[in-house]
Image 1: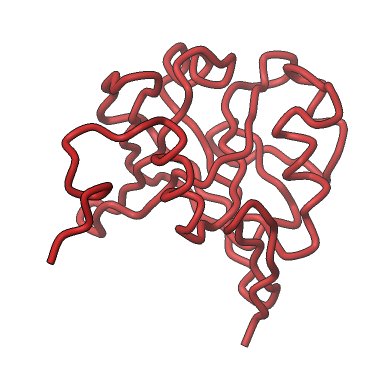
Image 2 (image 1 turned 120 degrees about the horizontal axis):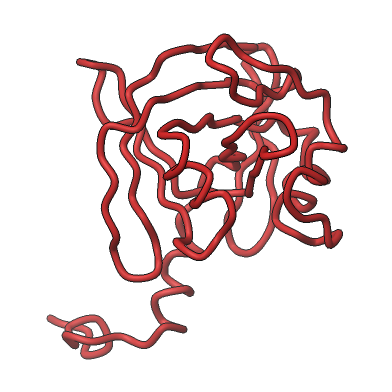
Length: 171
């Protein structure tokens, strides 16, 4: 038995977005750059790739300043947000109109050993060096070799599904 709407070779953008909205995703900030050149955005398109060597895969809209900063510097960091960081997620998504380095006025930001932004309240802060960069439609897919990690697993995680934020409690 097949469902005609799912068996079609082409789907609409709305169908795609509706289907992807059903996938719960960890809420992260992808950041790059240093000082006044820092850039960042909110993303759920982040996943582990391999543990040998430890690597992450991130997808970033090719038209963003964050994408340009990653391509220019060859490195990025991922901040896994805690369940108390919904406001920060919205801020980095542009809900408050902040752009560029202005976004870093919210949150307790530090600098990791490789010079990348590190959020003090993140469940995990992971710094990466880009090993692969490819353009796929409207987004660039970056693969990064992990160079630095700081963990705070005692906090709950922030996830996004069905157009809403949800808290995932720490055990």
